[in-house]
Image (tube, rainbow, N blue to C red):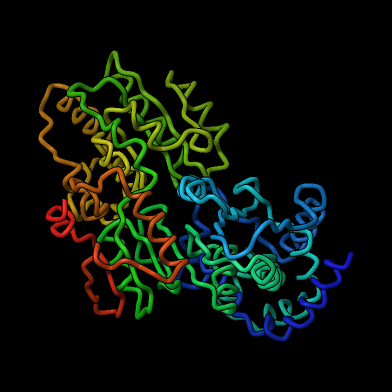
Amino acid sequence: MIEILNYFFSAIRETKHAISLDVADLTYLYLPHNIKYQVNLKSGVPRKGIGVRIAAFFWHMIKSLWQSPRKVSVNSQHQPFFFAVTNNQERVLRPLAQKFDKSYFFGINGFGNEQLPLFWVYLTALPFFPLVFIKFLKARGLGKKAFHYVFDAYWLSYGLFIFMIWLLRKIQPSVVILSNDHLVWTRTLMKAAREEKIKTVYLQHASVTERFPPLTVDFALLEGDNAAEKYASRGASKTSVFLIGTPHFDKYFTKVNKRSKVQKIGICVGMLDELQSVIILGKALNDAIFNKNIFLRSHPGDARATEWQQTAAQLGWAYSDGKTEDAFQFLASMDVILAGDSNILLEAALMNVVPIYYDFMKNHLDWYGFLKNGLVVYHADPLSVAECIKEIDRGSRTYNFRTKAKTFCATVETIYEGRSSELATNLIYQIAQEAIDYRLWLSQKLASGIIVNRLNLALQNSSG
């Protein structure tokens, strides 16, 4: 009871501070320059309507009464604080969190070791309804359109900010580590940590596009030059960037594909892909390719898993659920994959699996730069891609995908390949202790002001 009273006194004190929040920036995906792309997604887009969003707020608040805890247990202070809200964030952060004897790993929706007590977040947000509604009435254009999708996220962010301030003061972490920089949950935590002057670390969990926000954390552990350059193009930043490769690839490094023949083919569908276009491709592959095992894999964030499973059965294919099977685990048994403009193409290249960019929508997107950098084979026609797979199976494969992947994953073909988790863990520990050993790194300042630290391999090799 005393803790609850202390929390509400703290909430009252922070109300004035919370009022000044830029909640549109915290809900970055629905800013005017992102909203058109966002609402075109086939899955994961909130139902539209102010009334619907208000009802959703209260529905989630009621659900939180029995789905989330009522309090936070503090065993020790000044420990690393990890936070994840999706499957992809979890798979990147969990191996690192486990390397610390003591750490906090919070999340929502079952991710992390401890769940945020969401009921208190919603309850704290309640008094801010008039403020959000007034902002809605004043909004214009795409800014007003965003309210119809994320009115409840705007509303919730006030309570989330106040709760995160309280939680950070209670735990007093040495450092906050996240693997996302554009969702309301993680952006609000980043904002709260900055206010509390707690060091923040962003660990990249997938390829970066030019739509990502500028870096605002203290340290970013990125996979390679490509990500660093894209973040630099987003504007000036005081973030120090370290290129560490791809930590969640480490345990699969020994399982890189060495087969010369095509035995298994993976069709990896994204949240923008239509079922009918996959069926058309599937029929063409079934007619042209015999004695091959074909697998259909859905994106972990796609709510259409049941429909995709039915589509796989219709085509006589096996099914892989992205929610339950790790991408690298899936790729370890593949020889060729077909996917749209998706990060799994890069993951395939790291596993020496032939990455074919199959353009289901025929719009020639290249958000990640995979085409520009020659990482993928491009096809947009079912018959041509079937012929391509036949050529690969006949031994015509002349592509060196792993070398091409080096711009995206800095440790490829170096002595640190398969050791990215080790690099990340050491850096997080050093950041927490304010004692980074820069002797292992060479620094370069990009035009944006971002300091990029890359491994000094010459120094490491000469020192044994």
